[in-house]
Length: 127
Image (cartoon, rainbow, N blue to C red; front, side, top):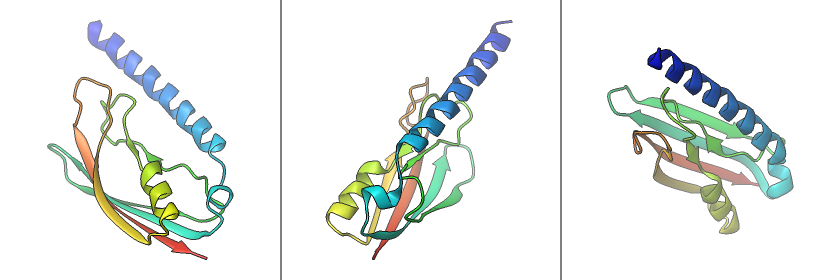
């Protein structure tokens, strides 16, 4: 019984997280609104999780895209985690940088902090 309750609670939390992310995305506005000088943003990530195969993910942002740069963690037991590249993008645009590489650790609030990470590369083309 305890396991079934935990499963339902996790599903409820995931559904709430999904709704919140959708609203955040809608509220973020467009790339062109925040960064009128940006023509394109490409984020390439190598997602790594202990005990799982690495996974390459690529996200493309055009001027009409939402300026929402938070990427969900792929771990099924992640609680409110993910990878926020907003500061990276803001810093790059401010300094007019074209590429940047780095690593981020999932900011999971669950029982296993640091359970996954990404190696990222961001490329920005300007108008």
